[in-house]
Image (cartoon, rainbow, N blue to C red; front, side, top):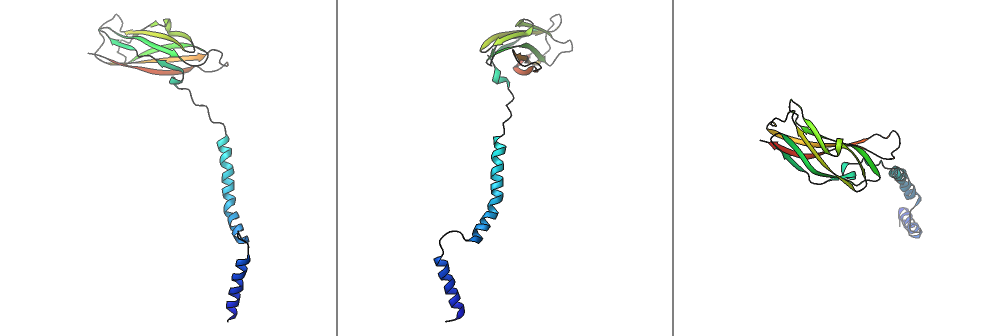
Length: 179
C-alpha cells in the first residue's frame, strides 16, 4: 500500500467521524452571501411601513347622478331631472355651473332653474334635481350641430379647516344634436 492511499483513507475516516452539518468554510461562505440579503430584507419593510399617500377623492367618491333628460328644441337646449345625490360625509356648500360646447358666435345665455343661481348646500345622502336651459340671445334657432353639456361643481365641506381650497369636479351629461 502506498503512503498516498493511507492519507486518503485517514481523510475518509475523519470525514465519516465528523458530525453532520456545515464546516467552517461552508459557514463563512454562506454568511458572506447572506449579509447583503439581510440588509435588503431589513430595508424593504421600512419602506413598506411608511404611510401611504391618501388617494385623491374622485367624483364618484362624493356624488352620484341620476339619468338626466337632455333635449334640444328649435331655440333651446334643456337639461331636466338631473338628480345629484351627495353621499359624502358632513355638509357641503357650493355652486354648479353648466357649460355647453361648442359656443356659437353669439354666445349662450345660461338659465339655471334648479338650484336657483346654481348655489346649493347638501348633507350626506341628500339629493337635488338640476334644471337648466341654454339659448341664444333673443331665442333664434340653434345652429345645426352636436352640443355637449358639462356640469362643474365647486364645493367645500362645512367645517373644513381655514384655507382649505374648494374642490372642483366636472361631469359630462352627454350630447344633443340639432338638425
